[in-house]
Image 1 (cartoon, one colour):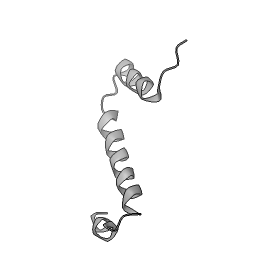
Image 2 (cartoon, helix red, strand yellow):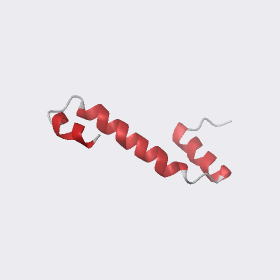
Image 3 (cartoon, one colour):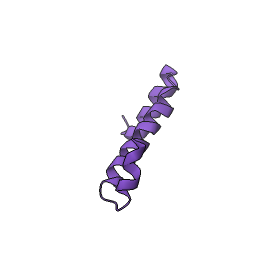
Image 4 (cartoon, helix red, strand yellow):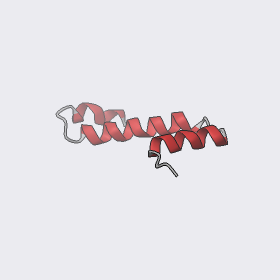
Length: 52
């Protein structure tokens, strides 16, 4: 059995189970978590926090 990456396995699951609604959900969650993670150490943090 070939070792697949997590991303390939995730997209294979979405394709097989026809759960296309998960793609925007996961992408928005990743975007928000990245924004929060990088804004905590950035000098722009006071400008980003009012968005939440």
